Length: 369
Image 1 (cartoon, one colour):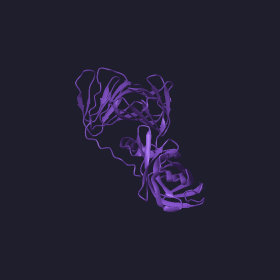
Image 2 (tube, rainbow, N blue to C red):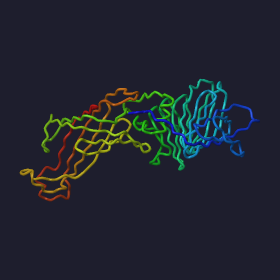
Image 3 (cartoon, rainbow, N blue to C red):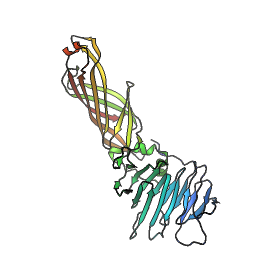
Image 4 (cartoon, helix red, strand yellow):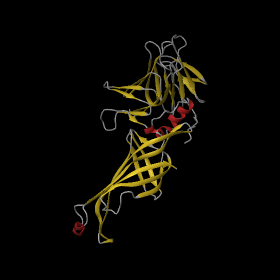
């Protein structure tokens, strides 16, 4: 999967307090090939062609197509995507290493230098809590509806919600606050495909050359696969025998995430497609449909087209990975497929002559084509 995504910057609006009469630490603000303005307090913003200095209390704001960058005294930086508003709330010298900001809305990327001072700080306050770190690479996005997502690529982030709950977010994990179900927010694993198909995250990862040290459970799944399923147990009622083997070709689409839920689509060479949900460790699919009840003496004769509930369940796990073009990539997936048939209660009475349940289990092995 190509990872090189170039920034395309058309315009930037940066609003930041600036007063020549004020001394103290400053941060360097730069426009990324577009218009930048700086302002202090209620002063009218002034256009800055290339770079300027932001002080404590200054506001950095981008328009709908803009991007900007704020570099702090110790070399740590924050990048702003489009339609983003960030307020600088604390600055220090490089030796003290104390930087803090408030993100009201928009998307930001943070590359933090290792914090070695006696009482260091790098913190991002959001409408739903505060993210604090000790040397890392991570992204923070907040919507106008005050839903914030923190994605960690490297290092560890501690997020403190407004009610005081502290959540630790490790590499290749994502936290969404508030939680979609209204419960206690929790960090969830993030597949690398979802990270690399996010233009903002991928572009910043590339620009800062952040190493992608993803765990095997987060490795890239996208691509073509050779599938082999083998019957390991059966009651014989569906015509299967232990040891029977079926082979198919599969394609797995890049994993996509909606909040904390991540899904990849598997498409068989037969044309069938199913969603596999990523639960942080395994890929899971389960579905129930109806199938025919047949005459056991004459299998060609269908007694009831909706005679059985047929439940299929897949549970798969990445068992082998390889770094390909700098990206941890899954090369082998293994697991189990099971099928359970159960006679429906409202079927044609003639189906009572058939079996009422049937079960078969297969072992599953996929290798990258």
